[in-house]
Image 1 (tube, rainbow, N blue to C red):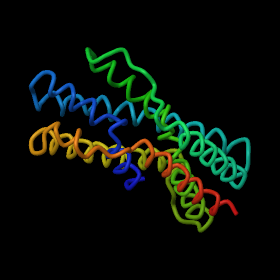
Image 2: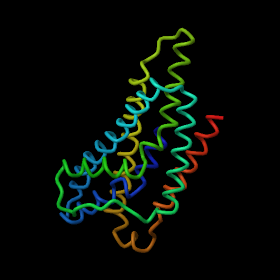
Image 3: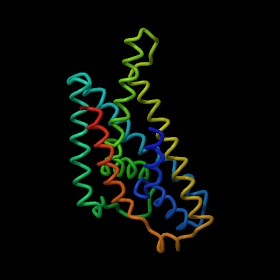
Length: 204
């Protein structure tokens, strides 16, 4: 979850580029840092929504079937993104408040499948808690352990987003984005397929 948080933080589509743009627009580095917090909360809310879906799913279907379903969804969405990586949800503009940023982040994380990408890791957390319980060792409820994992994921993402935005704002400047832009949308699509492959391997 921590590694995925760092990966999500690197993706400009998850928010650091938006925060950087706001900071440059208002000529303030402080605006960048302030903007990152509602973006991180919105992202965390999207992941928590997935946690609730996973917990509900574990009540109605077996763990093994949920692993298979996760693998199929990840691979299917990864293939879709691979051929449609250039498509993005549209936003109204740059004049936004904290609530708008939170909502924007929630929608972006959901639309890009950020929550879907972390399901295998969440299932791993659930499996670990079950093994502790079966072994007679005190264990945290699955939901509590997953929420802790979401907290670690969000903190990791926030730190990476802040570091990238700060380096571009203070050290590199916008010119580096024009000269050395990386197609992160394509990398994201491949990452979905890789995680889907891992989920499939875990299900077999």
